[in-house]
Length: 373
Image (tube, rainbow, N blue to C red; front, side, top):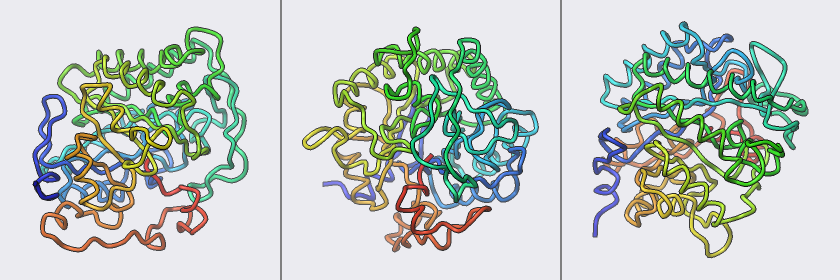
């Protein structure tokens, strides 16, 4: 029987890229850039320390791709301008010098935007107001405004923003791009039947609700070419509705994952509260098991996987190919190095995680506000 060290420190592959181990840093909201979205030295040090700590790859925080409606938080990093791109180049270079890969997660907040340098207006597939209040620790206060419905012209403009940002990512030297289709942000809003109530080709059945995501994947792939990694992040839960689940359960999961797997994506990244628990009710598959069953692409599991034995078991059971960790990575930026040396891992201490606006307190943690993007 293999030890968990052997499993976690095997080389892995995503497309034609070799990863030195199975540990990946999950994307996490950090809101530490300049007001205009330019990553600074603080951001640069944040990413470098994970590479020094032995992670095979780092997926960035959600980066907004345009200067219109995509930004979700004040001081969020962007990849929407030449200035943004030049700042990311330095970060990418630092990570590469340590032998790690770095993937840019491109995120459009849609109706979940609570701070935008460029506008106060929000947009969504249909008129929609997120059900919970804005997130205080990330600078928000009170209810979200109701987002305006996107026109077809607006949808095309959003696609152009993603495509340009993906090109900037390629020019900055990123190894890949991850499209953020999880946690209630815009792509997930299109996928969600309770949010997307459109009557055109972008709304209705799950196949139609997938249309925008599928078009975006195809067009981003054309823009970045075949060598660069292209992944997508998927979840059921949302930042403003942690109890949300797909009404169609495993059958809906089969449609979603098999459709995505037939496109030119290199991996599917699953975000869940606990990646080792049933995703669709008692006795069902986990989210990552479903993705493995219904696709042939690499699967990254994320959610309560700080314990190395638990993390390795998902890979050994062929329920995932890689493990992404968030809070444990904040507590231990050198997690892979510690695990390899059989060193203890420090517990996540919320009082030590300081953001520009506030300390993280018990209430925010209970509501899931220190989370994966």
